[in-house]
Image 1 (cartoon, rainbow, N blue to C red):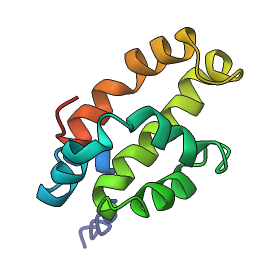
Image 2: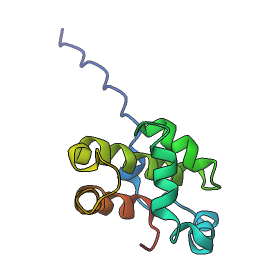
Image 3: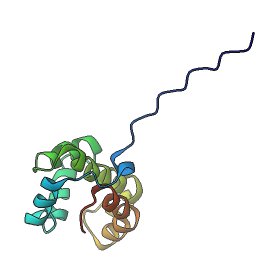
Image 4: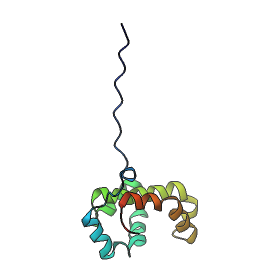
Amino acid sequence: TPATPAPAAPTPAPDASDRGAACGSSDLKRWQDGGHKDFHAEIHDCAAPCLGGELCSTDCIHRLSYTKPCAKCFGESVGCTVSKCLFQCMGGESAACMSCSNAQCRPTLKRCTGLPF
């Protein structure tokens, strides 16, 4: 008898960064009402006490009135910065840290959120 093919493994849910435009109209309003201006401070205020942890940062950003899918994009950006720019960002927000984060993580963040940066 012919062998029965193994069932396909379930497809994992995509990361928010894979979906694109995860932020909705309420997130856009929040962004336009000060989120864009306060972006770096808010990300830092969430990332620092979370020690750069993605899930903790996501929860913190969600508490700043962003929807969970949108906050996940920001949390993933924090995780990206930790994994790709740790050396440059060890001393805090610096020109080297910003340059690395902008080059390595910002394009994915922009695609993920769909927000105007």
